[in-house]
Image 1 (spheres, rainbow, N blue to C red):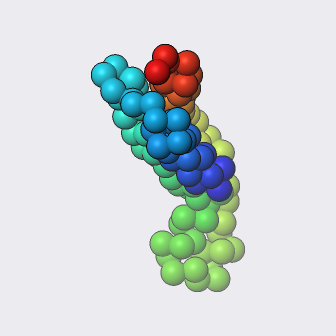
Image 2 (image 1 turned 60 degrees about the vertical axis):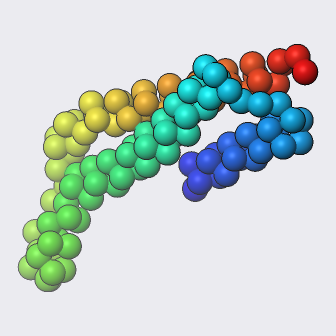
Length: 117
C-alpha cells in the first residue's frame, strides 16, 4: 500500500514542478527522473512479489495450494525457514534498485526546485 501511495505522490511532485511552478525537467535531470520512476516501480514491485513468494514457500502454504488444498496436504504442512535464506540476495538487489530510484528522484526534485527561472 505504501508503494502505491509513494508512486502517486511522485506524480504529484513532478506535476507541481512542471505545471504549477513552470520549471522544466530536462537534460540530466530528465534522466534522473526516469531512473526514479523505473527504479521505484520495478524495484518496489519486484521486492513485494519476491517477499510474497518467499513467504508462501517458507510457510509451506505453496505446497497446499499446488496440491489443491486437500486435507492430507494441510495435515503435512511444515514450514521451511531454511529455504527463505535464498531469497535474501534478490530482495536486497531489488531494494538497492528501489533505493537508487528514490535517491535519483530526490536529487531531481531538489535540483529542479532550486533552479533559477
